[in-house]
Image (cartoon, rainbow, N blue to C red; front, side, top):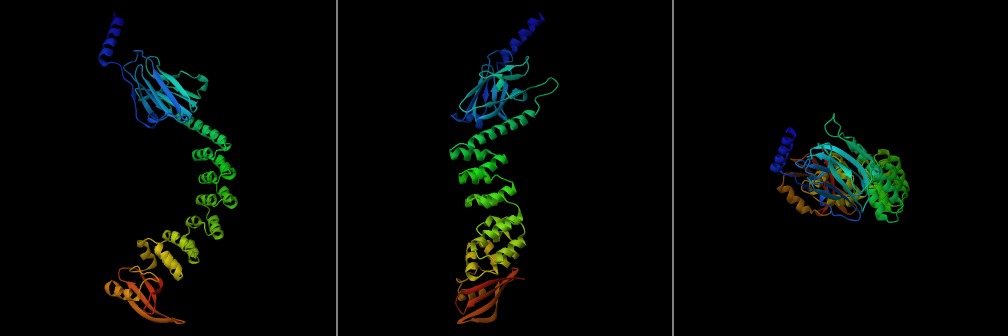
Length: 390
């Protein structure tokens, strides 16, 4: 009688509540379109009414795919490699995990079943157990799964990617090799690509991910491609090596930019004649150092640097109260500005260079902490603008 009542109550509950339905979540896996380069995975559940009011949660690694009700099926696409299928109770408590490798262009089917009336697991349906690299079920004394499966999956995935990269090294299609490098993290394999690959773009990509300083130095010295050498410089942190690189090749501005001793950088810039280099590096210095560098520049270089600096930085660095430009500012405009601004000009006399007479003014601004010595060709244009800090 008791057994009959138990069955009767179960039927009543099932009738009232009904069977749980299947729910598929929206994410990158479930929305991905199948292709010849992708893998399709399907997990179905039988139509048995046992456990019908409970759903089986399905995950691909840490990505939740959905909830399976009786007779339900979930299908999704993913990239090749190793996959971890986690089956959980109601999508909340993980009960079972299996990890196995999947190949592009293939479909892998599994069936979700109930374990002893409580808890689900997913069993391979169209492939053998020998393919399973790792499996774990919830033990009675604990609640859910351990996190070891995550370590195992990461390890297997790393080995897989390494194996694929080694295969790609032999591929004649440079696009295959380039794609392999983008996925790689293994420094040993990246080094092989960086040194041995015949395609400069593949080498450049590999060098950009290398951290070994000795190897980067070797690549910089040996590689004939300027782009590869520049990629090496961007990852070099050795200060002595960076200084040597810039001393030997002034085109390697990145080497100068990566020097951390700003006094050293200031000293280098004071002897630099390339306005492009000065313009690129000047903003990395403090204002006092920048002014010190600018004051050493000849007319042509100071004009080129000034014209390429951002306006807000130009005024601070060049010491120009009103943004005066060498060779452009007219003496008459200078006089007008001095009469209508908070800047003041003190006439210091003149200098004669052959037939050229220069009138010298000391300009200072009450609202600033710097001044300028400005030299005009008599009643003509600004000849030199020297910044003073005081």
